[in-house]
Image (cartoon, rainbow, N blue to C red; front, side):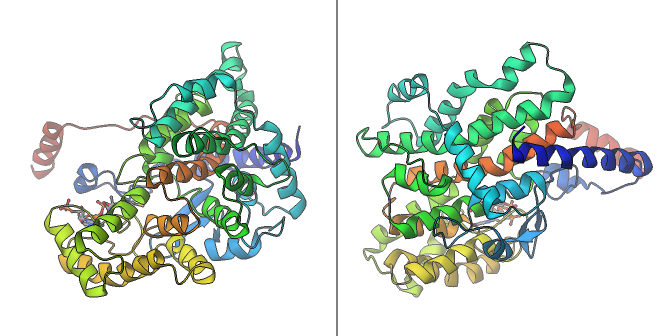
Length: 438
Ligand SMILES: CC(C)(COP(=O)(O)OP(=O)(O)OC[C@H]1O[C@@H](n2cnc3c(N)ncnc32)[C@H](O)[C@@H]1OP(=O)(O)O)[C@@H](O)C(=O)NCCC(=O)NCCS
């Protein structure tokens, strides 16, 4: 058993015992009340599922196993000359609850490199898609589905796998899948935008740096951006649409490939991950409509009001949980201040940051007027030459896989059951009201 799996096993044995005792002693305690407006309002805030890898506080933002993003930028190992933490370290932390050593991170980098093989079948399938008509996120989802025939979990289940082995085999699927995702994403990128001219993996590079290399972007600062990007997008607790989808589909004992592909389809929606593409498209529309590449703050404010008057959301702003500027936005702003503060697109993003919150606040209905993670990422990617906006959500997806697959391992380790909340009809709600009024 490898070193990460051994540590995971030790953690899960104690967690399973702890949770068993907790549920036995306190299983009937009420943890939350549900209001009718929450039932109609997309279940906002209802505490009703377990997610071990991270937790989201509305003011503080995301904490991964208790660590905030600024803390992780300090504490996670940086190897190969990196100035940003490696997402390998974050995956280790999410899976085991412990910060890894440099040795651990080096080992995991190597392990993922060894597992990173993309079959000809998947490449041929992708080659058959019309890149002009098929969005990169659709290609990504199709590729993950095409790899499903490689699922060890699905094969072992068919062979009559013992329940007690679910976690062990799920771990293998998740590790293989994470290892392959940069290959898949880079293949889609080079096929769609570089005339099918592919770049071979460099086995000496860590997961993110190798992804940057396969995209064709070898600048050291871009490799660091990828390390930061892949770390901060990885997980945002369990209730967000992509994470929840992976968890729900996984609860049917679908394997990691089926579950992740479903989650990626959720990430592809404009209110979720596609917002990173929308932000850049919106800025380009603004530049075109205003007829200037350097709009003033006043022009930006007017354009925001025009956008709102058309009944369209301002992409990259607002959040279902957060009520402060997203620390993932601030981490990217900090990176931009160090590496590309004078970039005109970065400047626009910062001006938008100054203008949008008071305007959204003045509407009186937007619960969070602040920027989210998607408000900044595109400007940084563009600065380093990744200019194809419709590829951005694929990059988000590669990162998001880390969190949702670490949790999928925990789902099977804890033997979490089939997810099945109770739905209600409006007639039933009305019946409930008239009964409770009597
Ligand atoms: C993220 C988002 C879907 C959260 O939705 P939510 O939890 O329903 O947000 P709220 O409770 O604040 O929404 C209340 C109202 O404010 C509006 N609102 C929220 N964010 C807005 C924005 N960025 N621009 C304009 N209006 C916005 C909502 O559309 C809603 O209007 P309605 O009552 O007329 O339907 C929403 O803020 C949004 O659409 N943002 C833009 C897309 C985006 O950046 N997505 C990425 C999220 S990480």
